[in-house]
Amino acid sequence: MTYRSDDGRLRPGVLEGDMIRAIATATLREYLELAPHERVAWHTADELVALQSVTLDAPVRPSRNVFCVGRNYLEHAKEGARAAGRELKLPNVPTFFTKAPTAIAAPAADLRLEARVSREYDFEAELAVVIGAECKDVPEDQALHVVFGYTALNDITARDLQREHGQWFKGKSLDSTCPIGPWIVTPDEVGDAQALAISFHRNGVEKQNSNTGKMIFPVARVIAELSKGLTLLPGDIIATGTPEGVGFARNPPEFLADGDLLDVWIEKIGHLKNTVTIA
Ligand code: MG
Image 1 (cartoon, rainbow, N blue to C red):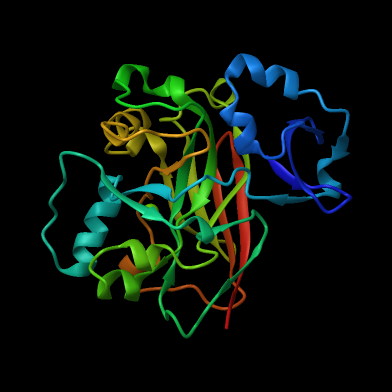
Image 2 (image 1 turned 90 degrees about the vertical axis):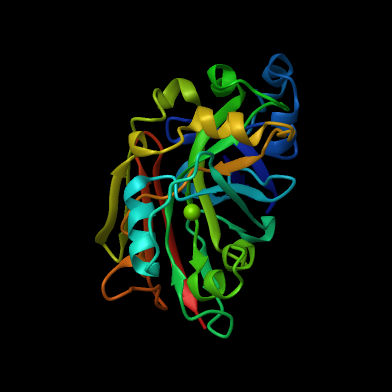
């Protein structure tokens, strides 16, 4: 996790009960860039603060774009095809796209979205993977060894731009459209990442409710495919796709409105809650 300490600085830390123990590196990414056996020495800074007393930032800020998988839940792929009047065609490999790092926002942040840019901001609750080691060509049966941990992510999407631009990047990369957090939970605590309940509530009303076991391409396969000929770096984030229930596929379609409360929940990880200001 990353929090703002009393002196106003952002610091990485580890949650111990309801206290945060500071990590002595400047950022969590710098900590992940250390070899695992070197991390121990940086782990025991004296600062101990109450979780309640601090503001959390995005748990990690990657050195480059957030990797994402599109249409990774069958029911979401179906609802998307239905809404677009297309025939459903499932790919043999994950559909990758990215979000700009400037889209990343803090857990609990008020997301300031611009009405002049889009009229169709939509939500997508997703399990995100944080990479803990530089790696390339990772076999699927080894892929979970490069995972540092898991967090929640809301892949907020400007649907009008996504359609208009053909290529998804623009509609997926606007400022503040990638809140993540509240923290990263390590695999020993998560257990089976393909057996987590995942839900999304807008203003207290359930809109998405599924399980990560329904992914078309599970986390290990996603890492194996993405890392083929492409080096992954410590601190890289991979958003693994959203289940059904998103706004644009509803009848009638629903988009985010000024003042909305967004709540992504993932079992074993917790709530990622943000408010939205659209102006
Ligand atoms: Mg998505």
